[in-house]
Length: 293
Length: 340
Image (cartoon, rainbow over all chains, first blue to last red; front, side, top):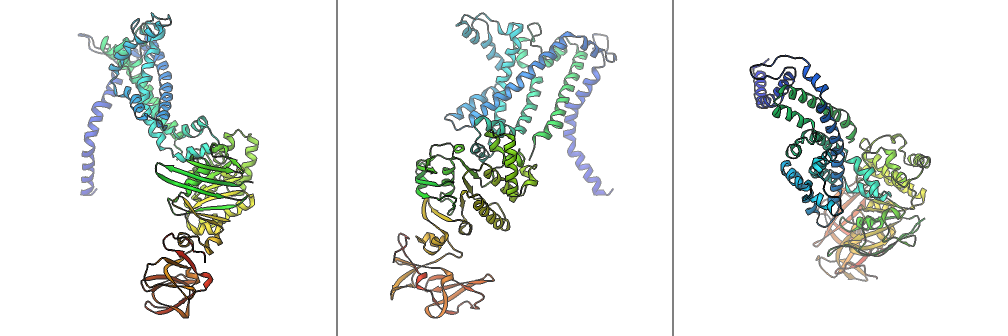
């Protein structure tokens, strides 16, 4: 290889170095360490960690709370994702229509996104509070008061789900709004002229043309469904009776409350595997089906 | 069959009147061109007829039915958009049958009409393709197909040929005209190209600043322009419009470019002759079959179209003459034709 060839190689390597170092130190190295740690026992006091093979995973399969967290997370994902996406689309259609005060509406819908999740949790804590909370007070007017929404096994998870939908929909709305503005108005006119009403135009023209946006949003929503646990930490701590324990919260609990870091590492590997599988499906399969241009 | 009648139609945005009190009527199965420079309100007029915009005042009738307040979908007309507005996510077959499917026409009926329409437009081989896989001309055919499959008696076309190259444009011009005559439908098409309007239309509605300047057959517009605007818009090159003064019952070109009388005479009607007004050749453009010679009389300029190559150099002395029948007089202030 010539002198300049070596030079170019050196330069490109140097240019890539900062990004590579950052990615390795903060992303890949922790992933590898986590995977490795999941095959070792948790070091305690003077007992160092030893290789235990799949023992942590065997514990996991036998752990009813792990399965409870998985089920909860599945319910959480299957409800928050479609609800927040549907709500986002509805809000985007509303604020893209030519209505008076649409600027104000856009701001109102977007506000939850700007608020930190812990602040949001505090606001909703007041809504959900028994007796003096907004919702219970309202129900009290009809003689249906005295509910401890966050304290009952049946209502705690739906309450947490409602907060997530409320928080995420405004964020997704922005993407739908941008997507709707990308659709040529003549296509909508053509659809109307051909006899399609609002719903038919929405179903046959707008939603198909918004599919790339929907894919992008759904990826974000899936990640959110496994990542957003701030409100669980702030409001319920997974309770009552693990009714609101989500996978990531359970990892946090094991790692930093019970200090069982090896078990937390094994749980993390499961979470990573789930997210990787979903990402592969979305980019590999769904991506090919939504881009038609 | 259908007639379109427009009465006192106005479309205003604030103080700006895009369409300013226009009136016209088409006959059954007529091919009508809405012609005018950009911003004259021709596309707005088409959108009002289609029902895509609401008229500020006035009325639109289709077959004596007042459709002014009727939704676009219920006016029983089809529209071909300038951009074709094909649905990018649907294939050609689904694009063409979109309206039928929306309106709940049975699958068998849809298939039957699709087959017929596709054959009519020669797009049968393309039915499975997406719009992005089609050329401009093919997209145009599919857009026409979507309009024609509804079998609506009125078809509106917004600048249907503007996105095509010159060769394809000439081809489609013929084809659209043939289709219209074969199906016997009323077609209204918007164009800014006077050649297109003159060669295709049964009747031309020439618009300017939101008003109808003249409405008539292509021959009427060419032979009897109602104003200097019409005279200057129709024909290539357009009619010469020069300040003139009366002389021996005829008009003579004045030396100065001002006056209250305007003489209009078409370049193809002027001849070089042994007698007539003296002029100096200022330049010429050769087109093969003919040559357009620019001549100067005083400070005024006239174009003369002569067959072949006259072989006149710049600065040559010539005499110009034309028949009295080809002389048009206009009022310099109003621009309107003077009835002689």
